[in-house]
Length: 166
Image (cartoon, rainbow, N blue to C red; front, side):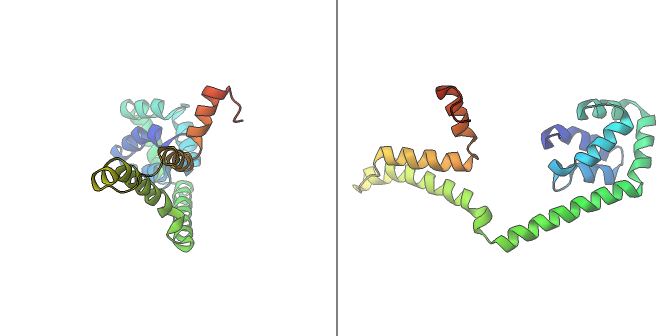
């Protein structure tokens, strides 16, 4: 599986070569689900990484011709349509789940920003009670560990506790 960042140059090269179905299948709405399309393109080119594929597309017109055949194939159209169906299903699920499913992260981030702003400026200038610093740090750490998927907490535990988080 390749990340969207690694696939971006390949998508650009495919689009420049006029391979619309391939570029959409790989760089479409869910690039992390483009594994089948990426493997097919890499197999046709005969390389193992998207970076190699990008270089070969730029210099070898025979590869572009093979990819044009693949681009026009029903197999690639099916892959692209399946990805569109998955993207639509994901969107429908998010809509059905309601706003909380995807709004809690930005809302929580703004809450943390407000609490720090309130503690550092508003409370001081207007004489309001401050949130105890230990509680503000604890809440910020809790939210950021949830917001970051726990990776921050795991990396700190690995660093300072010698892998005790596993």
